[in-house]
Image (cartoon, rainbow over all chains, first blue to last red; front, side, top):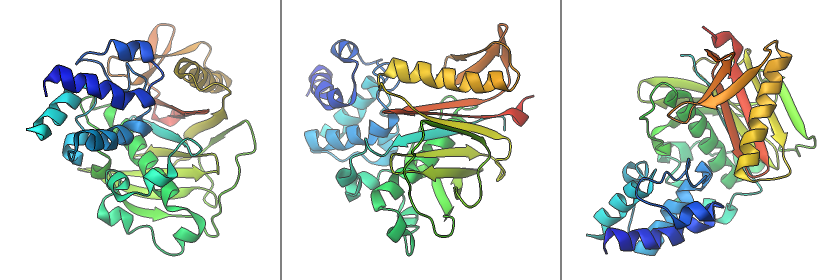
Length: 82
Length: 223
């Protein structure tokens, strides 16, 4: 998958956890999950679990802590899809 | 260390079934922390609430340390709760009131923990109600100078949560003698207390989740 394809799918993973749908439509690799999309930190584990299920990958805690913005989420996912 | 860290979790908003799944809680708890959940604790506290209790302690500790280390990443399992003490005869009750404000935590009411992250040892006090749980962290085991508050709100919109928790904490500071305090956020997202255009070195921690907001600050930590 290209980074753009991962980003498109990632929007669907993130969508249930943000009410800021306008910002979600315009996300880029610099979009911060908490500050920009106003996702509550209590939902970060949900996003990781949902991403694991969607891409059939395992994201360990050392990788999970990097998933703070869209770009680093794509990095972690694309590394595990190789 | 001049800092503050708190976290509130709306227990009505968590997914209890998902929390109990190993793939979920193993991203929050270390195996040693899971072993802290032993008799008689399970009789009083469901496992999913135990998980979120430790989450809130860890998140509070992260906020406490991140004020001075903006690049710090939040890896829950690396913030390890070493000791956890519940008051004798602990039970979970309804919140029942619109808001609570206090200084310090009564020994017969609050859950205490000791937590380590790298070289740091931190301490927490937590409260659990049926609707929510709240944690506050300090770098010593006294919370006598920690002012805190919990408030129910009727709109969970993010902007309203943020505005309400700021007003809630600022009103408390005004009661304590500050004339026109303002809270802004620095470039790393950390709340900074200002008055008359100058920063006041009182660390304030703000938290919100769903229909709940909470603040914590420590007056004696002022420089």
